[in-house]
Image (cartoon, rainbow over all chains, first blue to last red):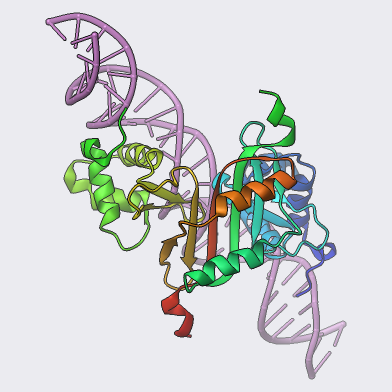
Amino acid sequence: MTVASENLTKNQKTVLNVLENSSEPMKAYTILYDIQKKGIKSPLQVYRALDKLIEIGKVHKIESRNSYVACKHEGCNAKTSTSFLICEKCDNVTELIGNNLFSYFSKQAEKNNFKYNKHCLEIFGLCENCKFKN
Amino acid sequence: MTVASENLTKNQKTVLNVLENSSEPMKAYTILYDIQKKGIKSPLQVYRALDKLIEIGKVHKIESRNSYVACKHEGCNAKTSTSFLICEKCDNVTELIGNNLFSYFSKQAEKNNFKYNKHCLEIFGLCENCKFKN
DNA sequence: ATGCAAAATGTAATATTATAACATTACACT
DNA sequence: AGTGTAATGTTATAATATTACATTTTGCAT
């Protein structure tokens, strides 16, 4: 099974496309409504596409919001792990990358005799734009 | 409004009690089924009690699982922020405490010009017991 | 090119998680 | 005792996600 986005299926491409063109995370049913004209009729078609896209790392789920975002990082190695900054005011979401979260969490886990595998981190606060617009 | 657990209401005490006696995180509807004999009949009663318990820091939500756990730490200051180790094999959940996650995340956020307020962190892997039982 | 196996699809139904709306009751405080 | 806030009870419904099963497409070894 190859993993590049070129050989995504029609439904997968459709879902990825709508996410990539969205400036915000989207919910599954919002995605569904947006693409019903393109032949996708049931929630399951959306969820199946999302599952696959998440599996290959093109999409991440934001657990606290039941929302999905397309990953902007070419060759994102997040795959299963994700780290987000979520603005509580404007709902803007930024993915944290290129940091050493993995090793930091591994150490924290080890202190509890826990073997790290993956994580999801969601940090809430104010984004650059909203920080000053009080 | 005082916050100590002594002046919780009947429903809140009932919900907290079932969570405290559970060795695992529980889902809202599981809680509901478990306490229907105690006069709680509707989901909303459970969710309202949970909301309050979360607000005062006696209960935390595990976002990735839609589950709820009673906090074991007297005077837990987690309130809104939470950090968990979640075993992928046995579903055991441990809360990370007394660490410097707050300051670490603040710094990570600052690098992105983001003002940290709170977070939820869920680390998945193998707990002490399951690590060796392969 | 053919046939097989794996993956993806289509469709309907249903399960699970959570909230809206609104009338009522309990309780702390003056 | 009266008042205001929080909590409650109840019904209905919204929002999120999965099961089940029949069918089609695709990759790829022969």
